Amino acid sequence: MFRKKSMITVLTAGMVLSSGAVYAQTTSPANGQSATAFDNKIIKKISADNMYNTIALLSEQPREAGTEGEVRAVKYIEDQFKNLGLETKVIPFPIYDYWTNHVWVKIGGTDLSGTAPRAFSGSGSGNVTAQLVNVGKAKPEEITDAVKGKIALVERGDLTFVEKVQNVLSRGAIGVLMYNNSTSGNSFGQVSEGQNIPAVAITRAQGLALVEQLKSGPVESTLDVDIEKIEKTSYVVEAKLKPNKNKDTGQIITIGAHHDSVHGGPGANDDASGVSAVLELARIFTKTPIDTEVRFLTFGSEERGLVGSSFYAAQLPKSDVERMVAHFQMDMIGGRDAGADNPAGGLIMYTIDGKKNLVTDLGSAAGARTMDVAIPYGQLGRSDHQPFHELGIPSALFIHSPVEPWYHQPTDTIDKISKEKLQQAASIVGAAAYQIARPDTPALVNAHVAPGPVDYNFDDRPVD
Image 1 (cartoon, rainbow, N blue to C red):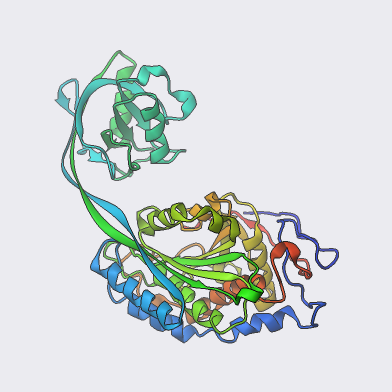
Image 2 (cartoon, rainbow, N blue to C red):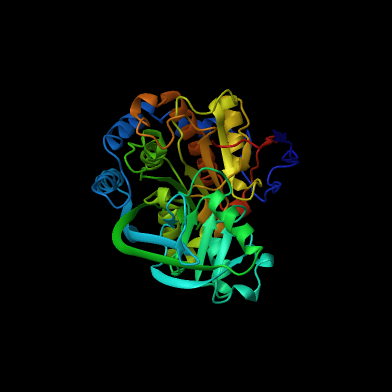
């Protein structure tokens, strides 16, 4: 399960580490104070009770994106940031629901037998009739010009739904009929804005039958999809904490969580827990000396596919992106029953590319200092660290893994929350972020202090 990576090595104060980062060593030559002393500026002020109470309030009702539940949560978060004196902004963005009037698939003029077909989320409406072309899993090398003007028969797997649809759309396909790669039915699939061709999901058995039928000759098919698009509004909440202008390094740290929950779920752990830590760290950082801008963020529509964080990242000015040096994402950090029997309650840092970066270096070092455990790292997307990574910003997701049985269930309630795990995760993220923001570490490239070596491993651990 573990693939060991090389240890971070530091030979002298001020050297750049393996990830290209510089942090604070156990003792700073500038003032003789230990890193632990600086950690305590954050850790001793963290209140798990505060976080627990925030979770209790936020999880009183579901917070599904585009609903009154989300609006209520956003208002609460906004008020908390404003009460701290932070420069606070609520950023609305559009999201879309889709009402399916009908989905029909005909093969040679006859309705497809068996389980009723299902339209992808966001599928375009339309009635198209053309020959089927089997394009395998719709990898670029599998698609030829033969798909132009035809309906692509695609197997699920390996690529995202959006990538598959785009690959066949780019070669001129006028529809997509995708079959499952398992026997779990046909409840899957989504397209991106602008991919406005009919896209329909069918079962694996139906798909394999069509693959065999195509071996005997051309097969004509019809996709008839009628879907209404309904626009709603979701939100990002942004709060900026700026240092004194005379001590400003010009750099930015972002600390985030998502405030929405799944439909019908109170989302106590997913992700009221992360929001509670963002608010608690905001409270503490406002009373702590800093020389770096810190942005506290909560995203809507994470459960719809990272829509809020993607929107936020896309609207950032280039000048802001160039100043952003680290993004810390907290998602599901309080689950009593998460983490199995892994060390540190199962806390792990996931990166998009499975590589160490500034955030994981800082996080693991903070864990080693605060709880004598070098937090491992792994590879996973599926949360709001992804859009920041895609902007080239060192990013990681902090989560207890594997997740608990209550994940995405109505039973994700306050009674399943562990105050100890909340305290642990908030302390590590807070201590790690403060290694950048503390005034005795100026802009990272100019730092005069560096940490002792920390050895932490890659953990090939599934999240669920």
